[in-house]
Length: 109
Picture 1 (cartoon, helix red, strand yellow):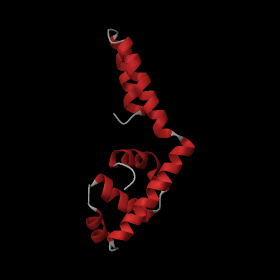
Picture 2 (cartoon, one colour):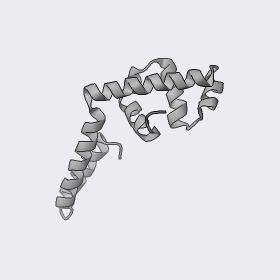
Picture 3 (cartoon, rainbow, N blue to C red):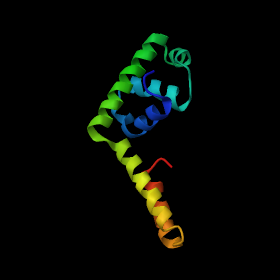
Picture 4 (tube, rainbow, N blue to C red):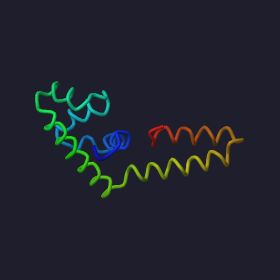
């Protein structure tokens, strides 16, 4: 597939509810359960090529969503900014805890 599974998984976390039910089912198995295309095909009753096409179309759609909305990129930027803030306040326990809570609520970490 064109996207690596980690990026695809992250995009799916943001935009997954927007893909079709069939694509969502295939992506869940492929990404989250780490099934091969053949295993996904067997489980949902279509050909391996059919699964590949569903995932390929979903990847394209997820990338278009990211191009339009930029949620993944924004999250990465926020995470980088939080890293900088955490480094600058590492001796201030109260502020560091607040930043940790913020990170937990808005990033994948």
